[in-house]
Length: 160
Image 1 (cartoon, helix red, strand yellow):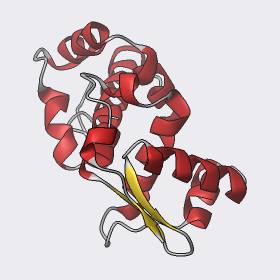
Image 2: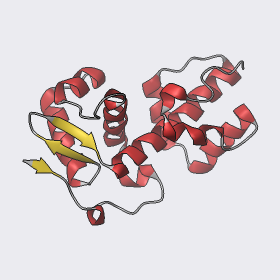
Image 3: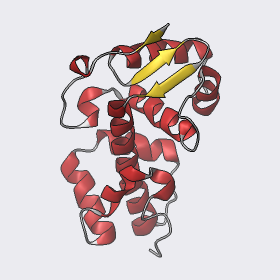
Image 4: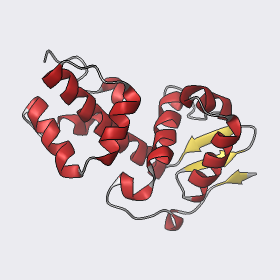
């Protein structure tokens, strides 16, 4: 049985942090990263391993994210992000990219992915925009990230 909810069930929020809590967003990012370069389908065990959480916790979160319209979930075959789920995951990755790049370029600290994600999640939009400007002098450099995700973060190879 596949669970997919209509777009009407998805919040019409302006920013991803208004749509999904911090842990839910972390799952969306993990699902997007694992599913990239293949059909997008991700199994419970893959997310469990990536996030170091128990499989029943992953299943519970899959149910919650499916109910919110961020993914399609079919037991025993896994999940696939909906367009909205992918959009939210990419925006959260963009925020992570800006934070990690700022810290690497301005302080020399190579911040772990999860720490960058959590800081990027809680910072207001204006702070994310300002960090991007401080690193690259333009507020939109990380804006190109959503087409590919943080694996191709435009700042990843900058000579800070």
